[in-house]
Length: 129
Image 1 (cartoon, helix red, strand yellow):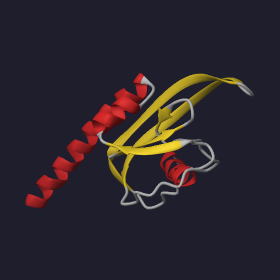
Image 2 (spheres, rainbow, N blue to C red; image 1 turned 30 degrees about the horizontal axis):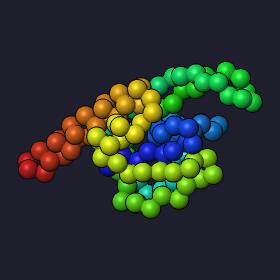
Image 3 (cartoon, rainbow, N blue to C red; image 1 turned 30 degrees about the vertical axis):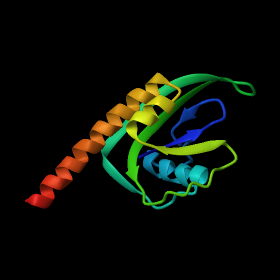
């Protein structure tokens, strides 16, 4: 299952910004907790992808953003949304692909799903050995 957040005008992944001294993974963990209340998670696979994009902000003008995405697993199902979001959903691959607003996010999800599948296959193979 994949967690998506409703930003009011689009559906996307939890994300945020780096704070001074943080690694991209540390920022991802902190932002996930701030946005969803989820603090117990384990990084899975070596999946790490960066995406850069620009958008128009009413107060800041044109904003350029670089986001690093990771895959993680959590047993936490209950999402406690921050004020930044109007909804959340745990979705299977098919439904997540349909819900995501941006094509780049859909392509990223397919890459992440392939990495997770490969990770799980390797883990299963190692257990059999």
